[in-house]
Image (tube, rainbow, N blue to C red; front, side):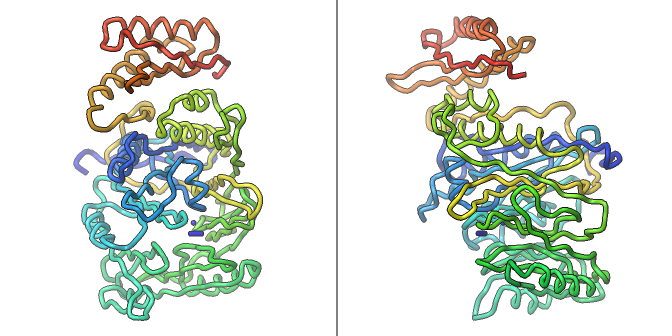
Length: 488
């Protein structure tokens, strides 16, 4: 498997025991099936939340075939359509603390071609690598920009002429005195982050051992930590755990102590700041954390993926919410993805302990048995940063973006109709939305959502009929699929 132009406000974090986070889960919601639309939709949705102070926590990693099934993503067959932007992105923000506005650029890679130019440009524009994940043959990365941050230089190194990318990286005369971070993208190329020159050069090493030799491997890692080496990333390869370690240019000695841990899904990495983790098909997560005697604890949970009978056999997980089930009445693939994102969001906000934020998200499998989503949470506080303040108030909900030739007018009408319906129903116990279906021979308005009683559901239908009276869709029949249950 592959794991300020405005007055700057500091990020004021309360005491750790008082800190609460709220999480959102983001997917691409375009109805188009083209690479550019998919990638732009995901990035647009992420930045919509980032403007309200949300930061990227994790991007789905793990087994790509599980993600394919969960997200209704056609498997990569080598064709020209790259659907790797169909993934899950988890974001978080502190509930009671000020947060800066953020901006993101997302990358979803299958090969190295052109990556060096892309990351070099992002660094010059002030974007810094904030989160990565490995998902089968995909590499996902989020680059974050907060106004006022200094630019950074990124370079990409590839395996060539029988020398690994790490050899080429360290042989570059511009690197040893400037190297601060290394992230492997795929086995044959990696990204290096460079800073201003320091007095002492960087050193880079690999540490590998069998999965069952965790005690021996931990001892080797701690010997390296005493010399100033910091873990850069962790990958499980067949039956071995590979850890890449870097003594940064000008790095202090010694580095924090290291704990190598492995545990069943939902309970790995008991203490320390997580430096890297990966899930494997033995049903466990392997994790390396720094400073295991410090105050930071890590806890998580796992969600078994199963076909749900009450969801028409759809692959789902956890205690399905009313809103998630209601969205499954739509035939638009993006809506199904959104339903799963909403369900995961609900599970995270309910099950992650107080004071924890998401650090990693994996699609995992135990060979020959079940498949799961693994959520890893940490008490590690957010990094204190300064920047223009984020927009106040709740961030807008994600919506399906109807795109395609000749559909822009329809999409605008649908957005306007949903906004009017939301305003009309604001004071009621109803969550409802509509889809306008304009296919030849199947013209109708789909009304779905959740109401606490039949009366509220009937109110939603009457309200929608009134809104449609003078519209271009007044003669379209309403297909009422609203669910009635005490969803609040």
